[in-house]
Length: 528
Image (cartoon, rainbow, N blue to C red; front, side):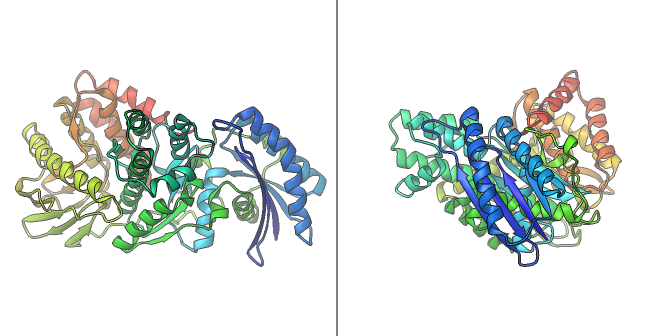
């Protein structure tokens, strides 16, 4: 089988032919390069109109036989560019008399890595210009385990470089400049497996304007942003229990990011795969490869139904080419006496546990030391404060700040992830409401950070917690827990309903406002 793929979501006018028999992928791309600033949608669309016919002609000339299907990037992306690509794909489908396949651009970034690596069901970090997602396959769809709550990682970096007057794209220039710099401390914003870049970019601009050397700011920017992406990737591996990570997206061409992810995976015994650069940046090869899988599964689209969707989220795609029984989620072993989480190793004894926040060698030493100390202090204080306001938590027996180590009471018999029930999840909603009424945010309330047993439900691991009465932060707690359920549970809907029901019943006057804000947060992810 040979499938023609056409890509044109933003800057890359690209065509490719994928041969399923030889696994050969021929790609031809003409990239749009703005004269100044970032991408201009009208100019990018004009580029697509001129370049798509040329790259398609060269791709078809390369193959010695006819193609069996035409696949195209249906979204997400810039509407004017997508419409040109869609028109070209429909015309080719009709003239060649072959089926048409509409491909989600973000899922293609994941699937090309899964295809090339041979992994079965990995977590995927998508790090591209307009996007930053953590995805995992579960219950017939790719679930968003975590994502940026404001801008894509590449666009965030470009905003900083435009402030400097540098041309697009800014990422490679930051990478080169950072090699000669020293680390500068910048805000580090992780909320469970979600993250935010806007505050970091503002701080980086301010640091440069205040006289910091540009090389130092670039170094601090890379270390902070990529440290965040690596941390949330490890959190996703810990939550799901999988030991496979795939990188996708154009920002994945950055050697420092790939090195961090590889080092993190090696430390926890996981496998890491980053496709070659031609498959990381926007390209038609990944469209052709996923298009072939979809075509083989009978997942084609009629021309009248083939309208493009600039806001096409990856979790909206029915995954027809994979088995419904496959999943990124692994059942946790409740009998393990030593558990490696995302940021700490927990050794369990009969009546206590020892939690060690081991150094993360992928992070810059200054950043790592700061985070380990801050989180150990936060966990110590908030675990005790939560207990005093009526939330069941472990007793803190001992603290060693130098070694970032805690000795705590052993509570529960298993993580909630291993014993999910509506009653337990409802209780989590009640406990979060109690916390919030006391002005405390947990920060990372996933199904791995709740312990359950005959003695009840306990909240643990307050390392990302803080004091606040802001409705936004309270809603983010619920959002983080809901994402962890939706990404791993067999039937997440009744569990999420139980969470919110418990929260509303136990919460004070502000509980309804928190749920309302939660709806807003859910609509704030990329392409909502």
